[in-house]
Image 1 (cartoon, one colour):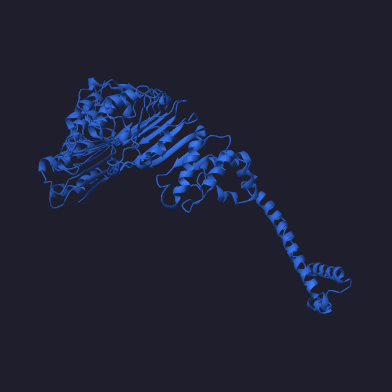
Image 2: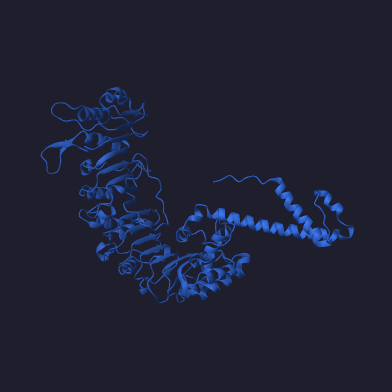
Length: 603
């Protein structure tokens, strides 16, 4: 790029001289030579006002001309930038993908359509001539802006959103006008999101039950106030959609609809929260049985079921052949067990289950028969939930975290030594193949854990399994150490807490066994690469079961002798025990480290 030369001062002087002499010649037909500031002294006094006016007019015109030239130069500079060199089609794809123009002008939004209109002329022209960018109507838009967007968006379909606070304060008149605008254009609406209260039931009923031949996505959230419901006759507890083509997406929270409607037969995504879930398991299963195209199913916070029949044979299993994502959250443990035992999702690759335990309503006897039905050897749905179904299993690594009242099973995505953080409930409905998180809450998790381990032991799909066990919050209900032989071929990491779990582990790891289909013996958990044992402060040392068992394990497994081949040296071996309460173990520290260099003792 060539460097611009600095404009010589005499060029500007010559231009001013030409302008000054021309104005004087035109005004009083006299040749007045330009002499800088002294030029005014040569002008007759009776022409001073006229000359001043002409100079002011000339100055305004010059400023305007220079501004236009500068604008033209700026436009050419902007068009030379990287963003301006993008083809218009690509630029439109970027705007549509990130949707910076969906929302109306507001202090709470950093970027909106009107900000982009002011960037430059080319952006202004492109946005104004692109109807697909004007297809979102929001309840917080001024009515005139909504009308502008409505006109600009033709002939495209519309997406509307209504906020429950839209009619508060001074916004009441605007909200009334907007609602009328929405109702009058129901035939163009493709997506509808409504968040409301039962106070506005009648107005929103017109939106929800009116003719919507283009509707594909519907999301409705109703915030209930029991105090208001007691004094109101017309509350939005349920609605019925009009006839029309099948919807693809339905998300209901706090309001019910008739799921047997032909309008929902083609659903791809179904999200039901709270009282939106049918009020009995049979009604739920009946509704799901016709949704053969369903790919995403979320069930949250069921609170209105009365389950009286605890026989699994009383329910007809439902097959969802295309389901890819299953999410069950904040549902009582016995109801979660009932749902999982009666669903078959052969191609589901993304599972999230997080049930809840409440002492007030918990009925463990209801969960047990359904747990037994689901977690039994050979059950295909159990393999699906563990990510081990299909010719190509999606989950090759499992991580177990077990305590007295909780079981967490997940795909191996966290550092095994870490305790699980709270599972995150995301609103993103995009399936994530291979993701598996199962959190079960039981008053006695030992029975369920034994059933699950038995199922896992018969699935050859896992390359590694990590096991973390803790006493949880109730020291009176410790979880018994499972038979490690069940997981022997897959266990690579063991992390145990409490003498009740550490002692059986020391005994089992010192043993050898015959592998399936072989006459030769090998070590229990032969792939074990990390071991962590932690005695609790209230545990007391037993010389036979603690120090002697530890020394026997280390000598047999990693020192060897005779014709017995030693086991694989662990990459990490951590042992925690209070020094004052476990003096015999501490006296063995040097000897054990000589045989197992990775051994670390802390207390």
